[in-house]
Image 1 (spheres, rainbow, N blue to C red):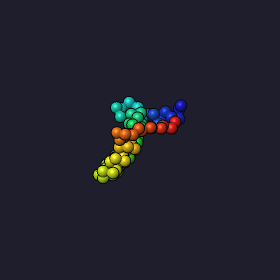
Image 2: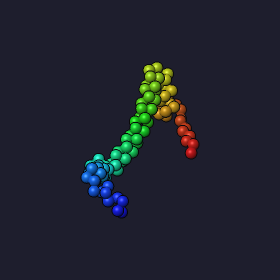
Image 3: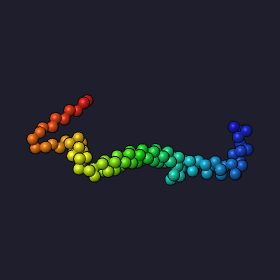
Image 4: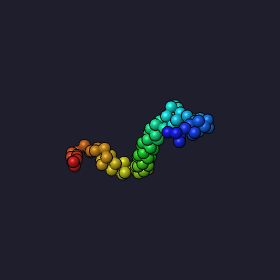
Length: 94
């Protein structure tokens, strides 16, 4: 303990250590807040990538729906529409 005593008497080291402890643990933007904000940011970026992928797919589908034959194909395959004189059987695999 005696070998650390001269360092603790130095006002610059003491002030620097107090400042470091305050900024890392006691401040409003402490280290724990920064880590939690970074994790939230990464989750939001992942959601943004998913939404962008869905947006690209939707725009592609919308571009295909400009033609009447594609509208009928899309309605039958994706939305399970049917004509008046037919039945549609939907098979789901688990």
